[in-house]
Amino acid sequence: MKLGIIGPLEIVDKIMQIIKREFHQIQPVAYIYKVYTETPMLIQDQQEHLDVILFAGSTPMSYAEKHVKATIPWEFIPRSGSSLLRSLLQITLLKKHNLFRVSSDLYDLNQLSETYEEIGINKDQFKIYAINKTPLDENYIDYVCAFHEHNYLCNQVSCCITALYNVHERLTAKNIPCYRIDATANIIRQTLHKMQLHYLVQISQQNQIVAMYVQIDSHSEYSLLNDNEYQYIINKTNVARQIYLFAQRIKAAVIEIGVREFLLFSTRHLLESVTNNFENIDLLQSVQKNTSSTISIGMGYGQTAQEAKFNANLGMERASSLGGDLAFIVHNTNKIIGPIRRNEDQQQEKSDHKIDKKFLTVSEKSGISVNTVYELYCIVEQQGKTRFTSFELADLAGVTPRTMNRILSKLVMHGFCFDVGKRILKNAGRPSRIFEISIP
Image (cartoon, rainbow, N blue to C red):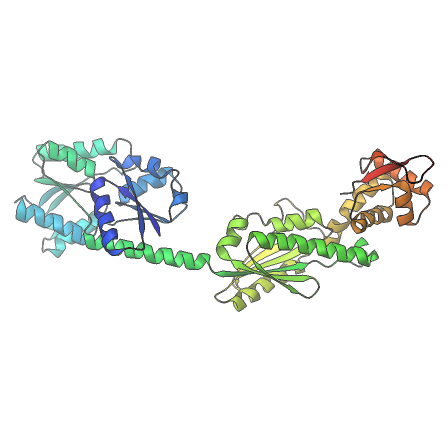
């Protein structure tokens, strides 16, 4: 675990020594500040290089939260009752100051009052002058110093208690009795143990197995894909290619189930990273863009691979029942997220309308029948190329060269075909024009 430690030199050095002696599995990185307002600048570009960040106290962490978004776990060393008790003992036993009148800038005054009561001092016996500003206010350090100084010079208090290193230094330099609340070694150990445990839990969650069930959506009996069995197989192969490309990105194991279903196993961290926490499941987009099909996706979490698979299948079935081209995320039967679409403004259409839409668009613009458009599309897919002479296309489509030339002229006119050159097919005769088919 790579741990960033942010605080004044003295406390950071103390934490580093404890880690060196007792926490060999932690790799510490020190970030020293003179004033806690420097924390945002120190961590601005550092989180991607760390696993966890530990702040010397709640004040620098609160200030950092105001300016920087946490992308990794943040923790601070709390001010415990034992730390307060140690300072109170120093005040009364070593320095002989009056415990019953103090000035404090501690954030949690209830804890200070409880510590007083634990050593036998009732609430009506002591007076604590507390500050009424927060560390997020501008010029907070100057305000705190002036607050403590005023209370002491006016004889309202016998000493000051602070959690801020800068305040302690400035008041001490003016010979104003000031005691700093420092974390004990035991509190530091407890915090480090807590951070280790949270880190291990996080790693365990990231490595949780997630199943992804993908089904190629069914076509209606009127879909063009049903007119050409060979093209149907090619299309299914193209869908499988997109699924395997996506599986490669999430390092998933892929199991093909039946003719139209695929089961992928990956980890939570990889799947959520690639999909940006499921905001962009680009497999839906790539299948729609590169094939003549749509898919239904279910992503399932679980304590076991079997449970994850069950939940993934549940999500896939729900997506399919709504017409497909959707995804659902299933944590359990009581927590299902979805439907997730390719984009927010996409309307819920029937899947076969989506499949045939591009052929209908070409047909309407060019004035060629949709069946002819689809037949040319199938020729391109089956031959594995886009460039043909009109004679080649006529032969493959089973029409006369004159008919094919009329078809190609309409496609050229509307930008679905391009005249890219000429080629001599025989030893004599006029060269044949070469056309490039560009049906989306």
